[in-house]
Length: 114
Image 1 (tube, one colour):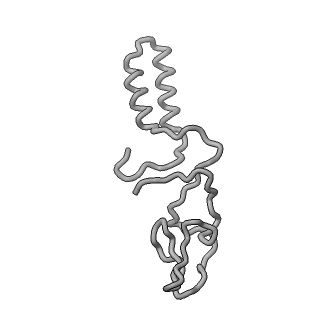
Image 2 (image 1 turned 90 degrees about the horizontal axis):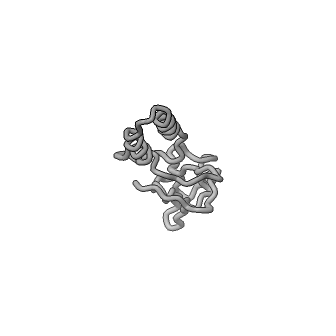
């Protein structure tokens, strides 16, 4: 499953406030359009508050910087660092690589991605 970032969309506090929640009048079901999971049936209200554990929405903190492929950056930095012969410069290069590797993850990699 691919990820989608909707600029300007705020994180809903519960399914009732979510633009991906859909009520189907013909059958009385309420479903999550992101997962197609049933939220309520038989013309009943959603029986819980908040968002369920399986909710696929992930909040991206704002403000944030550019979202980059940190693994690709780390690989390129490691390749570049191997070319550095000066010990002090090499030490700084590997410190920077370590910083990138331990930076907080905003959006997790999907299965099959490293």
